[in-house]
Amino acid sequence: MPQTIPPLLEELLKKHQPRVIIKFDASVKLPYQDGAEKALLSQKIGHWDVLQKKIPGVSLKKIFDPETEKCYRDLIDVARIQKPSEPVPGFFNYFYVDVPHESDLEELIKTLLTWEIVETAYREGIWVPADPNPFDRNPSSGQQEYLDAAPKGIDARFAQRLLQGDGTGIRVAHIDTGWLLTHQDLYRTTNGITQIPSVGAPAVYQALAHGTGALGIMAATDNEVGGVGISPNALYGVAGTETSYGSMYYGALAAASNWCMNRPGSIIVITKALFRYSDWGRYHHYVPVESEPMVFETISHLISRNICVISAAGQYADYGIDEVSGAGLNLDIYEDERGNRIYNRSIRDSGAILVAASTSGDSHRRLARSNYGNRIDCYAWGEKIYTPGDPINQSNPGGYNTSFGGTSGATAIVAGAAAVVQGLAKAFRPEGVFTPAELRGILSNPSLNTRSVDPPVDRIGVMPDLKKIAETYHLVNFPVEYSPSFREALADMERMKRMLAFAWQIIGQIGFDGPGWLIPGRFPGGLPIKVDPWVGPFTEIQKGMSLIQLAETFTGDEASSLRAIGVETIRKAAQVIEKG
Image 1 (cartoon, rainbow, N blue to C red):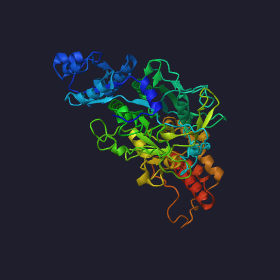
Image 2 (image 1 turned 60 degrees about the vertical axis):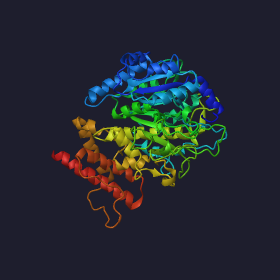
Image 3 (image 1 turned 90 degrees about the horizontal axis):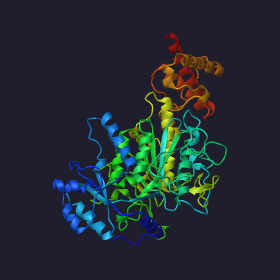
Image 4 (image 1 turned 180 degrees about the vertical axis):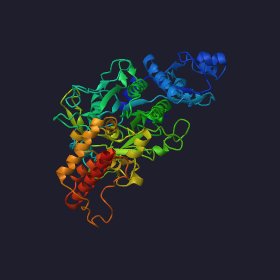
């Protein structure tokens, strides 16, 4: 039996009808409707008649309401069209059973797991804010230092000076409990935040400030009040998990998926984690929401449809029992109902980016309460985060929190960085945005990003370094007023001419007339930036202008040489264009 449940979690359990989720094997064909056990009885498969004698009135019910069902059927239809040779996800093999008594619930799960026709059975968890104590009433102000240059922060200040380095053109769907969208740093007259349609009206909920804070980290407008988000010009949508009909986790996920579908570079951000009652005797932690098979399968499918998913890793959750010394969970040892260590990548990997929390400051260690392990891809600040949202007066449209945190805050920081990278990629890569796998590889690459103080001990991945990512992947640009899109320019001769004219204008302004600017031996370890081999004159003009801009961040001979390399790159490209 689970140990004593802390009071706050007891309150959650009182509001949450216990349900057992069942997934039948793909060979079992059941109508997706309440009472589907009748098909089991008529086909004489399984032992439902025996089960009914043990638990009178036990009956299968469909998980999805009509609107959510439609969203999931749309996902399957898209999968059939895009990848007809692959098997479709088994979303409609999932059902649930309401169980009135705890003893019946445990007995039911044990029985179902012995059936050959049952792939899995488990008690449904509760989605909760991923940080059990996110609001410190006596905080030390972080004042958005997480935006600063690495190693302290992610260097969003650098990225926001670049074309589309503010997330422009990227859809970001945020899944949480609720938001104060009238907050002065979230309200906007253009490019407004979309309330993604779902079943039921949003519920009035005590954690309103949680969603506001997490969203504000990413989306706070650049409006001369309060702070500014990491990717303020992305197109945001919000999907709430609590509605007037009750908890709608699958509905929120399905609605967010539909809103993002067929929008290149789209991102779904989940700043909630999972409380699993059945885990409480072994672990006192919130775990990633994908710990439940239904959610894992949905996320895996979304990744295959080129929607990136970024999710909180969770953390210690034992309110009121051991708040000071409580340590995060090593996800490497976390086991599901069948004893499988599901966060071993060789067993399963949804493709989502899982985010842990670190300390703030100039260097970073794992935040003691944060979960960790080899499955974690990234970390970010989990304390002292300055963001919109008044933790005391949650309806205050001008309120701010100087100590938001936990894996919710860290996840929002990494998601904001992801939107920036996709915005830059959309502007400067001929191929366009990165795939979810490419994006995860970039954001989790130790050679590009900021390691923690002790990686073998911390085991929380790396924190994105937007400046290094932008420079490595040539996502930097010349000043915005001279920034035509490369791909648009290829189809627009007039724009090509303007680009060429500007190239010669730059050369004239700087006044270089020859290549005699490189001083032998000036950089014995190589030039401070690598210039790729020739890949086309217009790309080279863009790179040349980028080098000129980059030179402004250096001084002395380094600045002169970088500027000269840029000018010579532009000159050669311009000559090729003229000859062509």
